[in-house]
Image 1: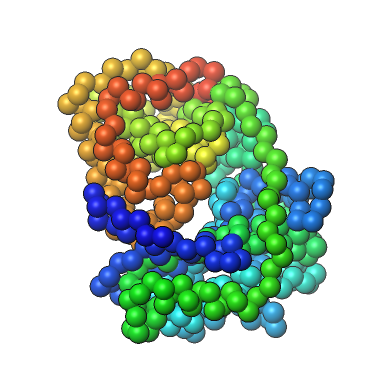
Image 2: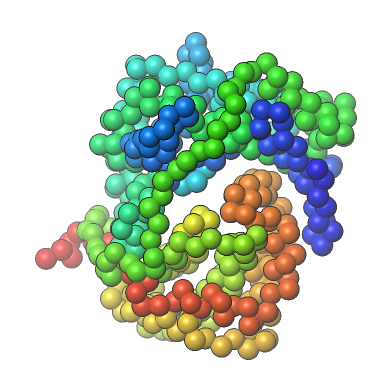
Length: 439
């Protein structure tokens, strides 16, 4: 299937193979660089599910999706997939998020060999007891590094004030205790359940002839490369995957919290909980862009509020804000380095609550909408952002290109439906103080 988006001059070609693997090509004629990413619809949220072939729910250790990502690079025979990519002159990487796990490579040569390697090492795992034990030690050190990071402690501290049970309260990597419970058998169960081709998406961004060695610009030639690779593998008939997620309303677990660490200036974050909600087609992404406008209007560097924070010395660098939504729930976060954390938290909370009744004039709305739209379009110049954005928004029932065309029609009155989120019961804060301020 071919979809063209004339407004932003993009094209997407998709095909679903007989085994269920969805293949997405975003052509970029004339570009030498390419970006290839294979994604499983499986992440740190999915800790309770019914394994393939079973009837009862299974609770798996926190961090197992991330652990599995690491272990898949260990190929049968002891080879490491990242070393194989390096020999081909390709840069490889992987990432686990709350809803997905992705494996990727980018480069300008040996793309057909890279594509085969990517599909093979992800789909043909090798789990041994000694390999799992070795990885447990590696990830334990990684987790301890996070525990020493004030930014990570700030994020997890805030999530544990906003949410009671939803998996955002846990680090994607799990805990030192949870990873010790991971076994080869559990890894096999997670892989067989979530890494079936029907639960995966292969996305390729670049000039099609780069993958075919200059032989063809026809997308069918690229689809055939994938089809050939998959034809030699046998997978069972796909089954619907049943996942149990503990959804919550907008009320936060606790209003405030703190920790003490080795740092000079306190770090503070104020969060607003976005409750469980199911959106119609494209509305999840439009909501996110709408929230970006509201945040820019409230806290952007050209606003009165930003100048007030500078004048009152509420921020000493590190100021940023974002909205996050995984298609089910999410949050807004505003944070900064501040010598006046109590005043900063109060100021930000008041500004967030004021958004519930904010009236934006047409000129202001138009200016900030144009800026949000322009920044998003600019981001599409990155092949990585383009591939991940198309994928992640797609999993949230949104078409990234289609939505941008719809966003162009957004009016200031449309923002009112997002003002319902800005209520006092949804706001919490967390501060990381210097150890020497502890009393």
